Length: 413
Image (cartoon, rainbow, N blue to C red; front, side, top):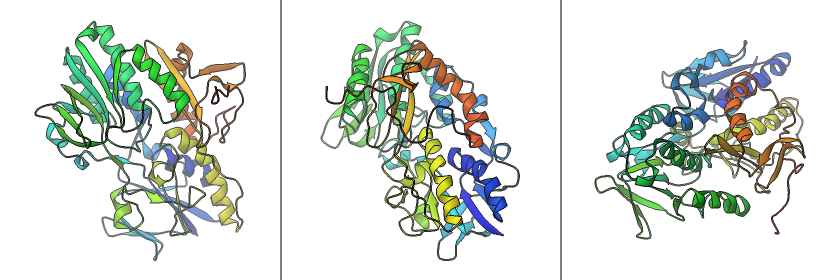
């Protein structure tokens, strides 16, 4: 029996296992999934933990309960991929052979990459991209009454590139609710040009930042952090002072990718023009944040991409070549505080635009506009994630490839 081995039982690995287990079984294949532990986290919820909007225990499920029957699940650290032998070596010495390999191991935080960051870790430097970090930050925010809070993106790419912006909006709301906002300066430090990477969204979201009195330091390439004196230092000599630094450290791919000789300098797997297949080995596919492509690193991209990749893999097994191409489609909810949120929908070529989503006129969600319905839709998405998306099901009215339906093209305005 032939074997599809999936490395990683996060969003991408779980979706693909659920999508493919039936079709592969009927073709005489099995699926083996490997991950280091049995904890699956709803990562979008990490952002809301510091503000008391989610209980940490609600964000964890067992991976083994989310994977379908008939899949072999191995909980063990991976030592390396051995492409020539078509096997995956585990830290206990076992080797798992594959006929096709799917790498879906995501990214992880590397605070050690920035000089000085770990010296203040969980003292005056915090993250929320990990659950323990979000829990620690919740306690710190509860104690913070005055001073300068800096929201800091160390370098791009990061997973969910709008999340730091959400945090800045939410922390503004949080301190206003507590009645101490006038005592606190919020500074948004980013290596890119502003609130987003595309001009239409940047204008709109930048206006929101100004309205909420959030200061912005753009094109800030961090050289080092001095936690003792509360300074973030840029390579060009600029300094931003802080009393509390909420950082998104450097995001990198899995270490075993580097050991296997498959990664770039950030341990992401370079892929061919399809965006899915390793440049070096045709029998290795990559999904989601682990891939060295130009698509946004976000859960929505993984979901939409999986609807294309499952067809590519099944065609591959059938000895055919899939003609379909993925466009990097992404959509994101951006919490703006006060029970409102913004929705953006875009792809690699078309930036976020205003309009209605997912249906023209009807919506019911508005694009690039703060509404309460957008906020409640984001909260409701947790149920969709656990009970629908991870099972490999398409979301009604939201196609894998981006649609211009309902959008107003204001790019030339």
